Image (cartoon, rainbow, N blue to C red; front, side, top):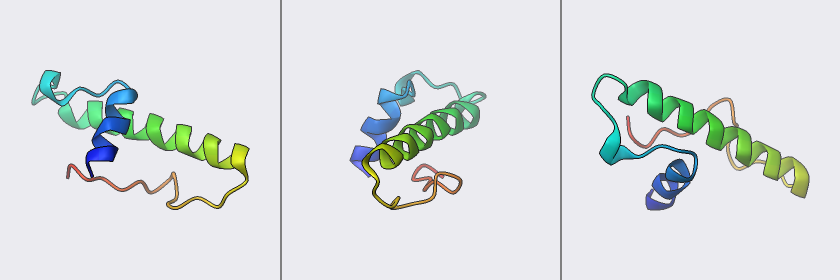
Length: 61
């Protein structure tokens, strides 16, 4: 779970700077970017994905 937070931060999501009004949009956008990056890395390596990019795990909901 902590690794997921680090990954989201690498995609531009900073929980300490998120406002209550923009939080859902900010985290969803970061999760979408993270899923796209992970899918691209999976395709490059030829491995099967651990989770579907279209259905990412949301640990903050």
